Image 1 (cartoon, rainbow over the protein chains, first blue to last red):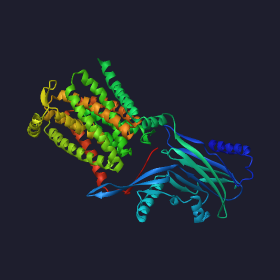
Image 2 (cartoon, rainbow over the protein chains, first blue to last red):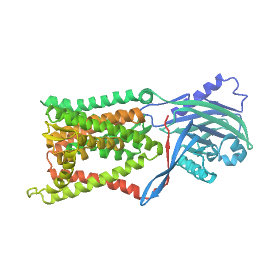
Image 3 (cartoon, rainbow over the protein chains, first blue to last red):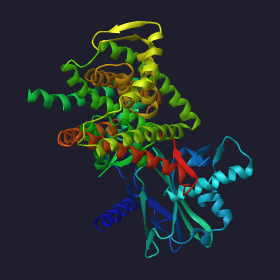
Length: 249
Length: 311
């Protein structure tokens, strides 16, 4: 309840400062500017809060940065199931959440959905190496199914709450293993099958604290990191095992 | 209690990883094995990428072996001449194995190779140990009528072969004379296994040193640990340098768990009869091998799998 009130106060305060909010069909308060991944990060809740000019339907599209994904297919070798073919799925967003006040297919034509990228399986994905159309289609189908199963691609037509046909709040849950980079939140106001308002906001996800430093050192100075860490591990093992021995003597 | 691993780029349960470390340390204290052969499969079952499991397992073994090596050094149980030759071999083998890992990773075959190597090695070792320890338990009470001829017959042929190789030298500490090529080749095999499987290789090294190289058991354990310490350390450095796959938090949690487990295992080990201890270890090894075979035989729920390039 307190979080909800805080959000409401935040959006009201922001609206007072924004001079044009009364004229725009759709105004959305910035949800967050940055998400930091630290040791105890297990995902986070985001709230998109805004105001619309009058009754209508809403769609919020949350898109993660592009990510190279490898898909593998198990094949049978004698009695064993082993990892067989592999392809790379390039240019696909790491995360794609579609939130709406009603099923998107019922409020927008396929052409409008295509125009704004509001179809989970309509995302452009490049399959590498280049394959014949039907083979690539199989991999694409598997890719979207796995992304949905693992919760990275998701559509929800009950996550946006509208109050008095004006104020709206969307609750979004980001998973723990987020891709680092820039995320985009697009909000669309739909009236009579047409998009009449469209806003775009962004926020960044980055590793922070020790995790960031560890990751950077492990990749940018990998040999130094390997040497120092292995030496530390050996010293730790020595201290934990040998010091009690010295005490006993 | 979840914890984010920056290199594996995933959340793990701290208690679970500490328990894995404790289980391996417990077995190590109980029956005197390194336990690297258990850590890698357990981490893979948890969802940690095989290359991170293998590399962090090597770092963990370097950590836990350092304390034990120190104690053996204090007791004068290390044949440094033999240890250094083994080490040169295992560093060469380890370097080759790390590059082989890189090629296998690029071809997408690393997971397949690791799983098959584990099934073959654990299946063979587990079955041999189970048969031997069951025999020992069944004849417990009677004087141990160990069949010394079987290993002696097979090892004598190897000894004759090693005796004909060039670069013969003596190892005064162990009281043996042989070609440098023998321990060099043994070290190389162990080095390759360390980098591909994250194991210390004690289960190969110790029997070969006792039965083939005819070294005294006390010196074998100390020298094997000395070699294990510097082989796993070198593999850990190389895996971090070439494949960026050592997760420091994962390795530290495993070290902490294993230190606690080793102390518990050593206490219990002092109270249980040796043949029962060997039977416990054999059952654990067989259980892991069976689990891996079952995973390979059962048709997958979904034939497609997905992994992401973490940046």
